[in-house]
Amino acid sequence: MSLVPMSDILEKANKGGYAVGGFNMNNLEALQAIIEAAEEENSPVIVQASEGAIRYIDMEYAVAMAKAAGEKASVPVALHLDHGSNFEKTIQCIRNGFSSVMIDGSKLPFEENIDVTNKVIEAAHAVGVSVEAELGKIGGTEDDHTVEDKAATMTDPDEAVEFIEKTDVDALAIAIGTAHGVYKGDPELDFDRLKTINEKVDIPLVLHGASGVPNDDIAKAIELGINKINVNTAFQQAFTAKMREVLEDPDVYDPRKICGPARDAMKEKVIEKIRLFGSNDKA
Ligand code: G3H
Ligand code: ZN
Image 1 (cartoon, rainbow, N blue to C red):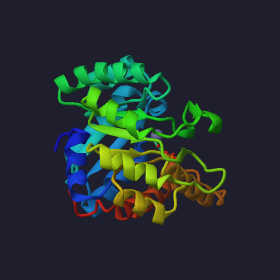
Image 2: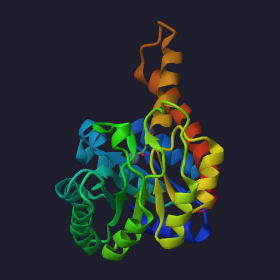
Image 3: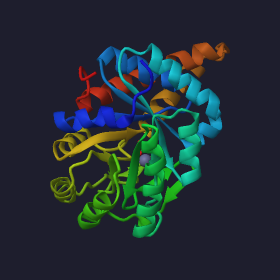
Image 4: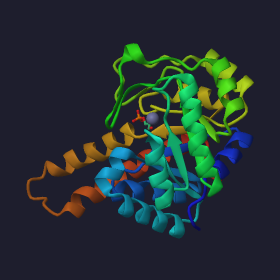
C-alpha cells in the first residue's frame, strides 16, 4: 500500500495501549532492515529520516526508496521527517512525498513554538500529512542537533495542555529525562511527569532518545501513555558492530558481504524493539 500518515498508526496505538517505533533510516540497508522486521512481526512502522539523513541519501532517493518499500510492504508504513528544524524543511518534505513531518520548535520560546507548529499544521493537514511537535528540550546529540545537558529542560505539563489547546498537532514529543545518542550515565526518567502529562493530554505522546533506556523503563513509559518511541543510535551500533566483525577478515572486499550481515544484525535489533513496544501483530 502507499505510505500512510503517522496519525493513522498512532491513533490505533493510543487506543490499544502500545507504542510504534519511529525508526531512523540512514541508508538503503537500514530501510530494508526496518521493513523486513516490521513485515516479519506484522507491525505498523514509522520510517523516519533526519535532515542529515536526507542530505546523505538525497531527498528524491530517500522518498523513492521509502515509497517503494511502503508499496511492497504488507504492513502500514509512514515516512516521517525527524526533527524538522524549520517551516521550509517540513514543506520540502511534504512536497516530495513524506506522509508525516516533525517540526521541532523546542529551541524557540513557547509562543513561537506554537506559531511555527500551527504554520506547518495548516499546510500539512491540507494535504493529509500528519505533524509531530516537541515541547521541552531533549538533551544529547543527533546528527547536527545538540542540546547540552544544562540546556535540557523537562516538559511542563501545564504548557503541554496549553500547547495542545492552541494547536491541532497529531503527536507531541516530550522531555522526561531521555537523551539522544549514547548516555553518559544511567537515564533517569521522570515517570510522575509523564503520568501527569498523559492525564491532562489525550493525543499520542512521543519518547525520543530511547536507545539507551532500559527495557523495564520503556515498558513503564508505554504503560503511562507513550505511543511512539524513536530509536536511532542502537541500530547504528548494531549495524557498525557487525561490519567491524566482518571486516576482521582482510579478504572481504565485496560491500554486499559487509553491508548484508550488518543489515541482518540491525533487523534483529528492530525485531527486539517492535516486540518490546508491543506493536507486533498490530498491522
Ligand atoms: O529522533 C530520533 C531519536 O530520538 C533517536 O534517539 O539515537 O538516542 O535512539 P537515539
Ligand atoms: Zn529525537
